[in-house]
Image 1 (cartoon, rainbow, N blue to C red):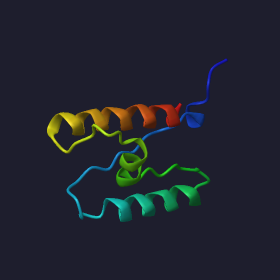
Image 2 (image 1 turned 90 degrees about the horizontal axis):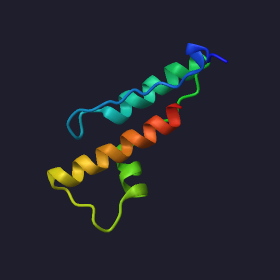
Image 3 (image 1 turned 120 degrees about the vertical axis):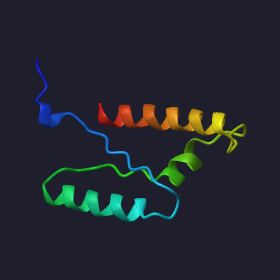
Length: 80
């Protein structure tokens, strides 16, 4: 059975500097999608970090890359 392309999940990842308005833009985008009958899942980076953080998570480059990979896997799972 072939899945309809419109039924497949998509990921929109907004990345800019802290305080630049990512959350506001994401919320506006989610609201616009809802208006078109699309039901988005909004993942705030701070919330995701808090939810999946382990005791070894730090703010160095290597730790941030590990966190990004975790978020990628979570987003892929939700999109599928």
